[in-house]
Length: 261
Image (cartoon, rainbow, N blue to C red; front, top):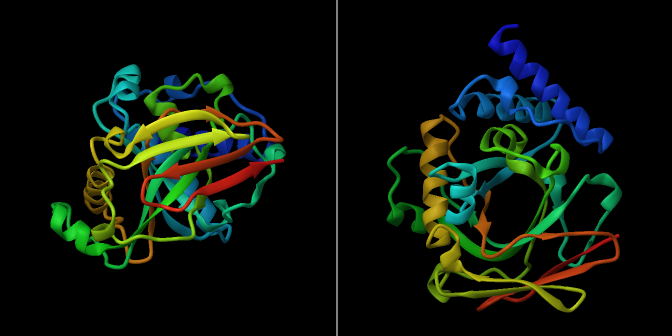
């Protein structure tokens, strides 16, 4: 079987698993590559098919921003996935658990751009100038791989295990907030399930965003004005189930919350 046929076949299987809410076995061995390029090719095919079916690309998510998780998966850099408009849930809204397989939730800081970032060597200064505002966010991840038994290749191919996201409704400018020092607390039905800080996200959420901006520009798919970037988890992820209400409080921001039904 050709490499292209493998890519197309794996993309089709992952999309079918998502549609049927039926996870599949790990796929890393089928990629036949130690590098992540083959896995990103699968992700790109999934994105291409989504766009062809009328989905609208609105941003990117960054994963593996924790050094501990990187070491666990044997990698030395984050990964990314695509965010589509139909993945966004309104703040305070409801997530239909039946549409997901094995969801988990994490608190993050999201940024929204108002300038394009075209250059592969984009600087931190250029990135900061391009950020319109930051908001607190909740990302719901969901692996299409059975029991979350994933390697870096599995999660990259599976669109970074992305599923849904919630953005806070009270944006803040970078000059008004310390993204590195801000503390985070996430609760489930009022009980604390995760704590962390901006520093847990690759040392600083903007460092993660800079990595993404450079990576996307190098791939010829630069981040554009209006794009949302989920910069990565500020603390441990939590499994999520029907009947649970999650709220994240990040220093300097208004709370962001969502309910699973």
